[in-house]
Image (cartoon, rainbow, N blue to C red; front, side):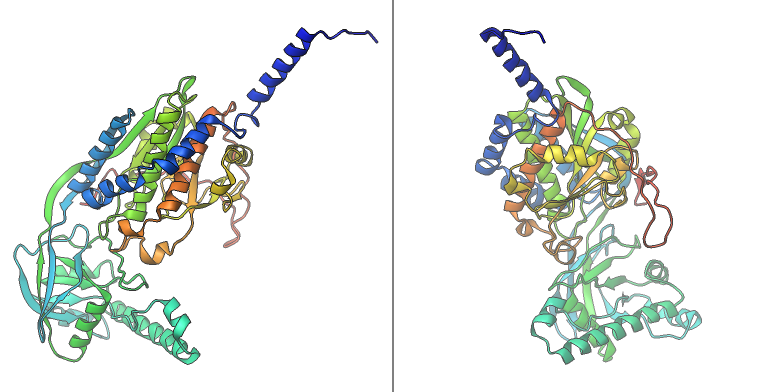
Amino acid sequence: MLGLKVTNRMKKLIALLTLVVICTSPMAFGQNNNPVIDKMIKEANENSQLEELAYELLDKNGPRLVGTPQMKTAHDWAVAKYKSWGISARNEQWGEWRGWERGITHVDLITPRVKTLESMALAWSGSTKKPVTAEVVMIPDVSDKADFEKWLPNVKGKFVMINAAQPTGRPNYNWEKFGTEESKENIRKLQREVLGSWAQRIRNTGYNSRTLPQVLEDAGAAGILISNWSRGFGVNKIFGARVKKIPTVDIGLEDYGTLFRMVEHGDKPTIRVEVTAKELGMVPTFNTIAEIKGSEKPEEYVILSAHFDSWDGGTGATDNGTGTLVMMEAMRLLKKFYPNPKRTILVGLWGSEEQGLNGSGSFVQDNPDIVKGMQALFNQDNGTGRVVNISGQGFLHAYEFINRWLSAVPRKYKSEIKTNFPGRPGGGGSDYASFVSAGAPGFSLSSLNWDYGTYTWHTNRDTYDKIVFDDVRSNVILTAILAYMASEDPETFPRDKAELGVNPRNGLPMTWPTPRNPNRKGGQ
């Protein structure tokens, strides 16, 4: 064996080479004490812009229903905000939608007593042109369609209730906390009976909840009254109207119940309704795109994703104002402390997610080169809570890459996160699915519930005051670090797909989703 004398110069060279190997290995680039990460965390905690952004987006601009002037104003605001941070941004048209603008909704009970009722016209509702005073009636209990057709002329000039009144306005947790076993069983039984019998009443008309409104409009009804309770105190879900010419008005649970009981008792209540919505014809619809160009691999992309649109019962605070705020604030941090990323970092604020992922689906169709060059997409949608779940969405190597990126996140911001690898490519309820269906690595940053489905999701109570800013700040830090790590990663995310196995529900083989065909011209 040959002897080798190691000089001090050689020792220094070996140490330097070792350092280079360590620093360029995939496992090492996210080690602790990273100045970029440290600065982003400090800025997010000590100079957060979230509250101001939330005020401007939610309170000042308001809801962002596709096709409304408020949606276009919000897009323009976002572009201006990005540019104020030195970030290139633009609005890209993806299609057209029925233009509509909400006006006043005002409903008063006139007889047998006077009271102003909690009410809101549905999205794309028709207007009254001027206040209309008329009697309230409800769908009758008929034996079949023929009997209903005989009754139908009675709706002319009247407001028609098409939902049952709820037997209780107390949410389940209230009954569980205070009710006796007997009272809890009684209310459950009553709910089943009342709602079941009403569903049968609708079926007996020969129509369903989707087709019945048009029948009533054609028969000359003055308007349609509904109440879509979310099963939370004073919370109604607000969706879109089924008819165009006459108003469809959601009445708060308590007031709807009052009207319903008056009709049942033969007291013939009359109400005065004013709805001043405006039809605006077909209007262009947009995605807001902002980007920080990559310095080494500009044709590879890390995408921050959130849908920008909302229903307009509230102001869309948690669906999806908070997701939008996370991506905007994360982009601000990245621009300030990571202005020359290795890969291009792009943020997409998508239009018309609520009507079928239309904005993101159109972007996927229109930008195949970007989709082909994607390193990763991080999407946040489901409410104000801190992120607690990340799935690999069926990508075979998600375990390796996501865990590597998460390794740089301080424990405080990831301790509750559960990962699921390789996961399944399903979950088409938000915009990451548009990318996954095209074979690109899109991941959902799924958040803690905060009773999202009951109290904010698609409801008239989804407003600024429901935001948990501590959780949103945590999500900003997580997202910014994930984007930084994905951009810096020496390796490119491979797109090998995992074997999906069998669907436990039906025993059939699981398949990867096919790309969506977005509705580029809708709401007609």
